[in-house]
Length: 253
Image (tube, rainbow, N blue to C red; front, side):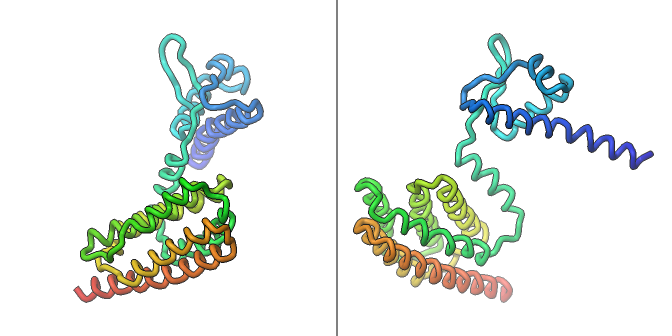
């Protein structure tokens, strides 16, 4: 009896999820955009052949995902929402926050994607975009003298990579690379990888970024690819050394 009740509950709980998926499919098939209005509750009950409670729960699921916005009162109802890249990244980051990601996991992705990204951008960036990258690359002309400065330099360096991803014409590639930068920023902060200033990481990182901007401006795709590939390999090695050093120090304490 208990097993049967559990099975029945699972079916009841899954029905709103299925209806939520059907609503999403319905929206896609009609090419609806942000701000477009969904059918009212009665129409949805008839459209999907389910109860009022199921429709309301399905709409709550979609609202929690940021896919719709529900307004109450006269003229109210559900309209299509727009999930920003920032919100999508935040939701995904919340998932990975509780996973045991390693620097190797992150750099495996970065080494595969970022050299290809910069090669595709060579000769295609505007003067304004190149100037912005140049300013980011030259933001810290001197090495950090304390942990707080080191933290800011780490985050600033990753901001350079995040901006590169935003310049990509490939929305998916840009999002994934930008997300990798965000994850590495979070990992840098909560594992305190900046506690000990790293001169080599600052020196190599700054050199590579300046060289990369030059290659991008000149339209030298292969050179840009090689610079980023070398940068990823060196940065991974130096950050792993930094992490190991901090772990050893912690264990010693």
